[in-house]
Length: 163
Image 1: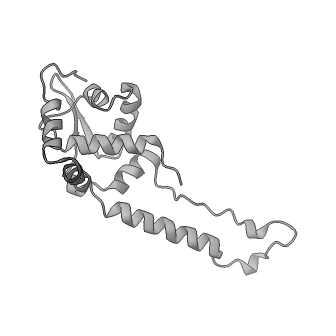
Image 2: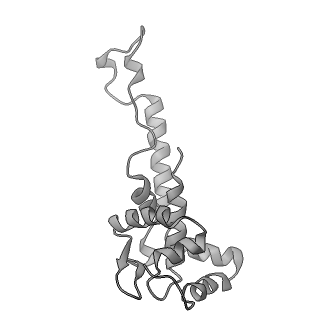
């Protein structure tokens, strides 16, 4: 399964928002990540539709997380951006061709479908167990505690673009 690139950008934005003391304009997030503002806006809109972030209007407006980062999972973000559908969808190939299995022999999913469903469930369980707070802590673990503090300082620097 291949996730869209939007998932990575959305996760980075969520992690950055954990360091923000005030709403962060989309343009500021785009600048931080050196990505097109219009592209990032699509990801932020998807996060907003999923109620993971909300837009605050006004001069000091921008985006904020809707709840504590400990309550937003990686799976929440993946689902917001790429949807809830499973990675594998069985098309019942076993019922096709010259040696097709008869309908009455196909009362349960085939071994391939069962294996793929189990793998999808395990993948989702892993992503459900990791929160945005865990990711932010990992940034500090990897790069030092000053990293997220530095992001916070950069975000609140004067002259930040507005929404």
